[in-house]
Each structure stands twice: as C-alpha cells, then as structure tokens.
Length: 261
Image 1 (cartoon, rainbow, N blue to C red):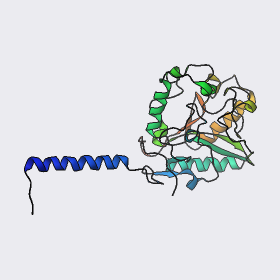
Image 2 (tube, rainbow, N blue to C red; image 1 turned 30 degrees about the vertical axis):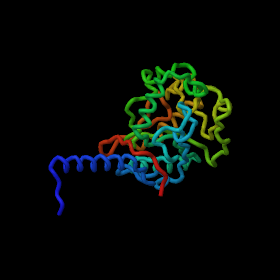
Image 3 (tube, rainbow, N blue to C red; image 1 turned 90 degrees about the vertical axis):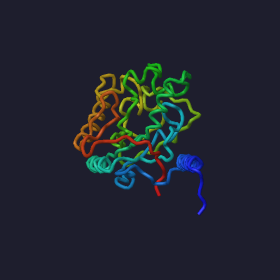
Image 4 (cartoon, helix red, strand yellow; image 1 turned 135 degrees about the vertical axis):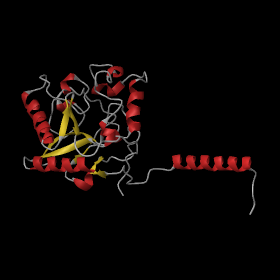
C-alpha cells in the first residue's frame, strides 16, 4: 500500500473535505423535502384554498422570495391538523379558509430586510404601504427580523365564501389601487372583503381598527373566533396573521419550499 508524508496527507484530506462541502452546498433541494415534523397542507386539509403570494410577484417586494420554489403551504403537522379543524367548522357556515403564507424559510426573512433598506423606490408595490416609507416598516411592527413563520407555526389567511367565487388572475402589468382602497379597485382576490388587502401595512389593517365598516369588522371577528377555538392567536396589527401555540417548542428552519413528490 502506497503511503504519503504526514503533511501531504493532511493537505489531501483538507482538499477532500473542501470539495465535499462545496458539493453539498451546490446540491439542489430534493422535491418534497421538508423540515422534520412538517407536512404539506394539501395532504392534511385539501379543502383549504392556497394563494401563496411570496411564490409570486403579487407581494410587497414585487418578486418571488428566495426559498419559495413552489406555491405550496407547508406547516408543522399539529398546526396543519388544527387548521383542518378550523376549516371543518367554517364549512358548516358555507365558508372556507384561504392561506397566503405558511412556513417561511429564513432566507426569505433576510430578503425582507435587504429590500427594506436597499434604497430603491417602492414603485408599484407602494400599494401595500401607501402611508409609510418602506424603511420604517420594521420599526412600525409590520415586518419582523425573526418570524414565527420560519418555525411552521404561523400562518397568514382569510375567509372565502362557498361556493368559491371566480377571480381574475393577477396581472403584473396592471395598475392596482392601494390596499386600503375599495376591494373592486385592489388586486384581484375572491375572499371576503376585510377592509384592506392582505399584507396591507397600514393602521386600517389593525384587527380592531374602527376605520373599516362594521361588516368588515364582523368578518374579522369571525376569522379570529374560528382560529382562536383551535389554539391560534391573532397579531393585532395584521388581521390575517395567526400563530399556533401548543405542542413542542418551535425551531426556525431555512429549508426551501419545494414541490410535492
């Protein structure tokens, strides 16, 4: 057996380890790969509608976010099962849930930070924050540098009437009104009108805002009550944002969202 000098062998081992590390970093995500204990919501509650905004250009950054390789809602299994129970209760009222965002890889959160401080004008995405400068959105509590979404225990969602109304597709070339404008002028959405659109960074989006109509407040209350019965708590600045409290301690992940097998 051929031998080598100690220094030469050590250098060879370092080269092998470096190449292995590079190969691992370049390996694409396997389809259907999920953090441990996570599931695709479609496999647990297929009746819940999905409109995954961060996998599209219809969001406040104007582009798909890093880590969203598929328009799929991924959640911790106990959270998905709790949502299935919420859905069952709403179905008896001819209503259904629609999710906008679920598990959010940490790289997407970092992209939010870069976007807020990139110094570029907001352009068409200004409709999501018509009253504020995008640099202030973190300080105002609309975006966080650490998100429970990354633990798979937070979800952004709304209510849709049954039967599900038809909806026009989002047109990236269209000019849509601010998220605080009447629903008919905002970007297309077939959900109940809650007074603002999703991801509307404005005080009118506060869950108990008195700036929206009594009917819109009633719809928000319906959503909050339905989620609360099954372990979810609402974030008071965003009528659409809910966190699930229960089960094992939550850990944040950065695995990308990939297509189901």
